[in-house]
Length: 225
Image 1: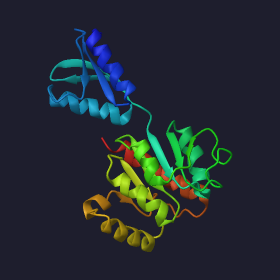
Image 2: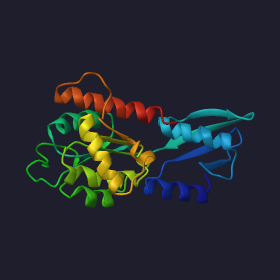
Image 3: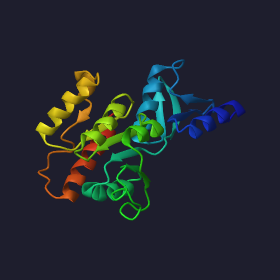
Image 4: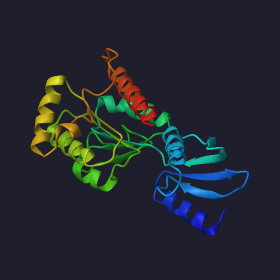
């Protein structure tokens, strides 16, 4: 690896930017992908490797390349330290997801209720400014309180978050969309919000609802290539 490639790879990893180190086989030439200056088929293969968090060998136009995917952990920003979150957070953590719980209500957002994850007592809009959701981030709101959920969703829609979900009934979600329209979001943007959040598995209990949310999250993530 050349010093220039090593420096670029180190910079990308420090910035938590997903990148693929492509090594030509057997020649050994290396480059970082995606790169608009190279074969688009190679870029497509690199994006696929990143979306699947998988490294391996691909053949592009008769040339073999080993693609080593360097992906920062997927982040799940949970707004609302509520009962469902207490089931959702440990499930997500077991999948290797970097979980952050946001709730300004001090009696809810405690490390005793959410051990071993980051807990932020900021207001959601302030937390989102700090966290800056990117293409490897998901945002889920669980509070049913517009003062908390709406600012988080507003900031999420302005980001590259790959998954945005909001708990609530269809009527609650319809009213939520009306409020977000008043903030300037169009229908295309609002369609990014999965509400009511979660797969329809007839979930009733908090653990079942958490399971339905996480199942939808995984489905979106794995089919996003």
